Length: 309
Ligand code: RIB
Image: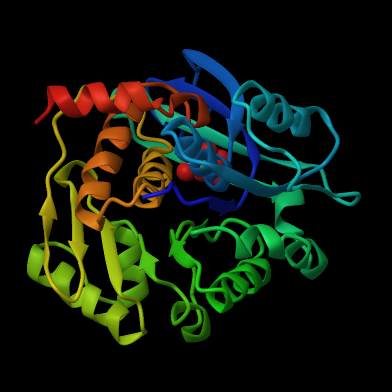
């Protein structure tokens, strides 16, 4: 099967990441042990994850022509990614995320200011119609302005493009949007917030999946952190475990998963095989620091899979 094109529509922000012995409580100053600045944003992380996994990707996002915006453009150049669908804001700066990571537990706290990527206009979306139309998949999240997500999902749905929605950062989603989604990929916390069902075992995960089926979605993939991933379709459901790895930083693991998932689907793999591939990508990413730079390349994913059969 010919590899299908993927449009990734989402946020770009610069990640300012600090590690420290513990996360500060309000009013406390904690001395950090290291600081790193680099490309991030859920949309961009997912686009890079898909590209590095071997996919044919168009990244759609919005930045400003400023110092942080240049980090997006330089990263895309380094990775040989097409930047012709990057929009430029005249109003707001390129966004930034302040990420604090506890070096003992690997837990994090993130404060993200979206800036330019929360200003994607109707005209911006309409200008990418040809690209969306010629894609096999649209992968998007909820980190840009939601009216733009709704518009691009509607466009993809009209052309029969498979819509994959990663529900991060979680927020209420209209039924109108959900009914145009083919594959939904919440984590367990997001699944609970969206469905009202605590995803604490396989039976409850299936109940949450049935909630989404009731909204018109055909495939539900709930990531469960180190417990693996729950997959549910009309034919079959179950949990795919993840191999044990030495975790350094979990930030962006969901993005590694989503990008690799769609990369594998676009190669014609079924949802189960694609989730195994995506689990491998996410497992590698948590052994590294940072987000976009932690995304593994194809040969690393293939090696990981052959070592963890
Ligand atoms: O999912 C991780 C991402 O979320 C980080 O790169 C940060 O930018 C935040 O938006």
